[in-house]
Image 1 (cartoon, rainbow, N blue to C red):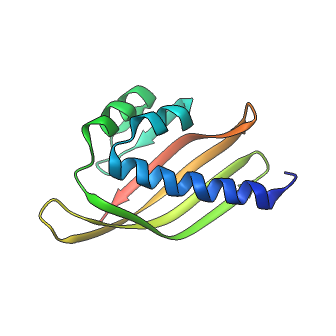
Image 2: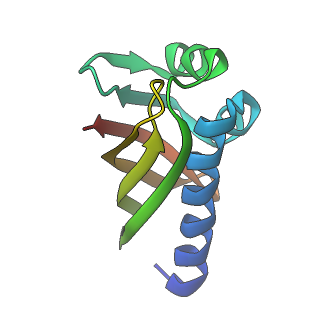
Length: 121
């Protein structure tokens, strides 16, 4: 893909905002950046579509202060995979961590998230 540095920076920003939007229950951000055919695998193993994911985000996360670490972005033509580690505060106040993988597709002139998979430890 031409201008890969530009795309890498765009994906870095999308990734930062994805994590921020989970932490702040920003449904509008997800509505603007998820593909219409988006699917998510939750930490409990449930598999949900875009509408269910937006509703879930709107209810807010059970964990707070989510931060991303060790982000790896792989651009494969018009497709990109983002892998990262997370840290967060659990409902009982203890620290937790996990991993996620988000898949992005360059479609209709912009990056759209087509799938996400979240694991919490």
